[in-house]
Image (tube, rainbow, N blue to C red):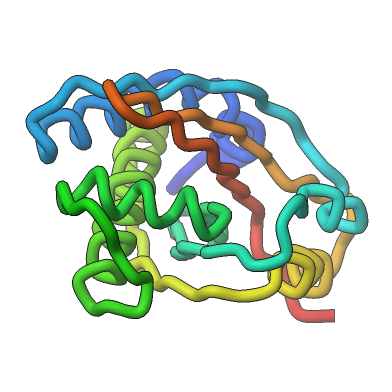
Length: 189
């Protein structure tokens, strides 16, 4: 049985694990595309759910989401603007142009989600010495404000904060910005 201390620590340790998570993501993607990439942490902060809509800059957003389960159930979201998502697909598939409605483009984004959430699950598992599961990532293209504002609706208590990680992927030809959000699921209000 996991101690109460571990549960409390992990709630706030996503931030402390992010350097290891980004190194693992960097290695996995570099191996996959046979090109060295760099994953930089641009910013890390906690955000009140009611302020989550402030993260929106562009209306249409590609969201890759997964559930991460260990002592409690967390939701992870990767938010990319449409152009950033196309550049991720282009990088992973080594294609000049891509339409995000193509099956191979959606599969590439799901694989990207697998790399990110798999890296996160692995690092949490190592820290807690326990099994961590995550769901198969799903991809949606949605209005940013609709997706982000729904976060607050899913969190019954506003005492919990959303962990926000702004990352930049740098390859020899690309610089791609994204936001990763992690939050504990609450009972629907």
